[in-house]
Image (tube, rainbow, N blue to C red; front, side, top):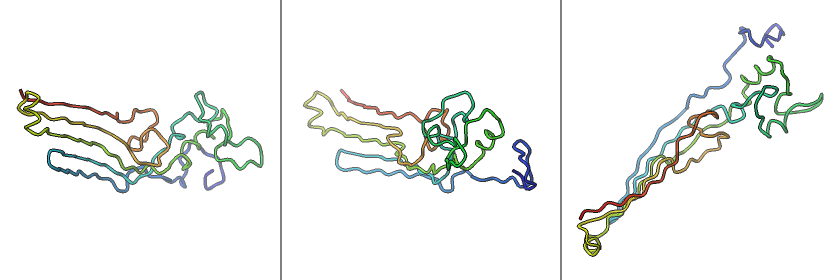
Length: 178
C-alpha cells in the first residue's frame, strides 16, 4: 500500500524503500601455520558478518507451482484472526509480489568457515630408510571442512538455495623418494 492508501504492487511508489542489505558489513580471513618437530598444521579461515535471503525466501511463493517447505505450510495465514508468520496461499500475483520483497525472508547469514586445513607429517630419516626410502611424508588436505553459522539455507556465502555450495573435500597424500 502506497502513501495514498492504494495497493500498488507493481508500481514503484514514492514511499518505496530498501529494507535489507545483503552486502557484508565485515568480511575477511586469516591463515595460521604451526610446526612441531616433523608435524605441521596450516589453517585458513574466512568469515563474514552479513544478512542474506534465507532458504524460505528462495522457494516458490505460496500458491505458485512448486514445493512449499513444511515451515511455511504449517505457519501460514488460513482464516481471519490467525496471527501467522507467512501469508495466505493464493494464486494472485499482488500478494506473492509483496511476499518476495518483504524482510521476512532475510536472516543472519554471518559465518566462520575453515576454508583449508592441511596436516602433514615427515617421517624421520631412520624410519624412512628402514622402509627402503630416502624420505617419505604423509599429508591430509581439506577444503571447506566445516562452517559455523546460524544461516537457514544451503550456504551463507552463496545465499542462494538453487546454487550448489562449495564442495567439501578431504584428500590424503603420501610422498616418497626412493
